[in-house]
Image (cartoon, rainbow, N blue to C red; front, side, top):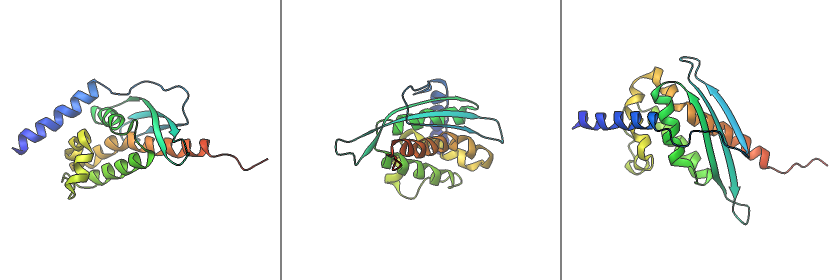
Length: 163
C-alpha cells in the first residue's frame, strides 16, 4: 500500500510540473518576489495582488501568478501552492505555508495532525521529498517567494504617515 501511495504522490508531482497551474505573470500586483535556490539554480518569480474586505480588516489573495525554471519538484510545488492559496485569506495562506514547512521538516513522515495534513490537499504529495534534504529547498522555493511577496504587498498597501 505504501508503494501505491508513493506512486500516486509521484504522479501528482509530475502532473503539476507539466500542467503548471497559475503560471504566468500577473499585472497590477501588490507584491513581487524573486527567489533562487543556490544549490541547484531553480528560480521562481511570484506576483501577488491583494484585496480587502469592505471594512478593510481582512486581506485576501485576489490574484497570484508565477514564472519559474527548475526541477519538477520546484515547479510542481509552485503549481500546488497556487491552487491552495489563490483566493484565500492571507492569514490562511500563511498558515498553509507554515504547515507545508512543517511537513518538509518531517523527514518523510506525515504530520501528526491529520486535519492539518488534509488541508494541504495535493501539497501532501511532497511528504516523500522531505526524505531528501537537498530537495527540500526545491519544494520550499515557491513558498518562500509567496511569504516575501505577501510581506511586500502589505507594505505597499499600508498608508504612508509622512506628509
